[in-house]
Image (cartoon, rainbow, N blue to C red; front, side):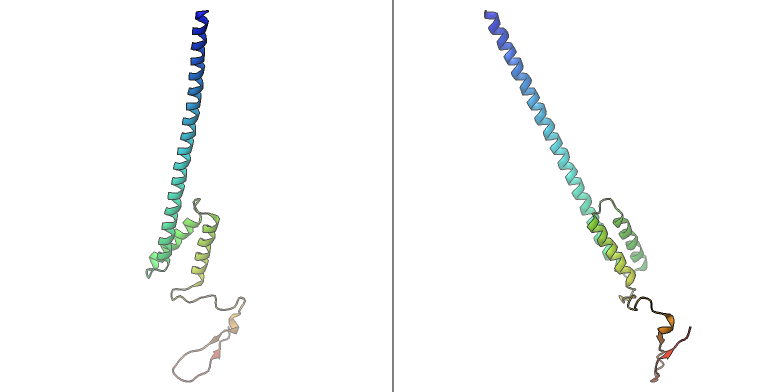
Length: 140
């Protein structure tokens, strides 16, 4: 009978060790998943911050005095708007900026100030010669 108590003690120790090993592996696996998720979140946050920096730089470039800088900034805005990193709200913002930029000329004037559907024969051409001359209609 003495050897049964030794066998049962050994079996109990083996069972306890096995359960401890399974619990430890589960804990390690859970920690690894949490660490991977944390790294993924940090990478996504870093990518979004970089997108924001590029968007800010493109906005600054769109209002530049240099025509080349303005053109390159518009290209950058188009690329940022098509990026997988941009959310739907950010893509809409890029489109709004590009749309506004298409309606404003280099002097900041809104080029859409004429109503839609205006015919060319409805435009009055006035030449300022220094005299008090009234506008003359130009026929097409």
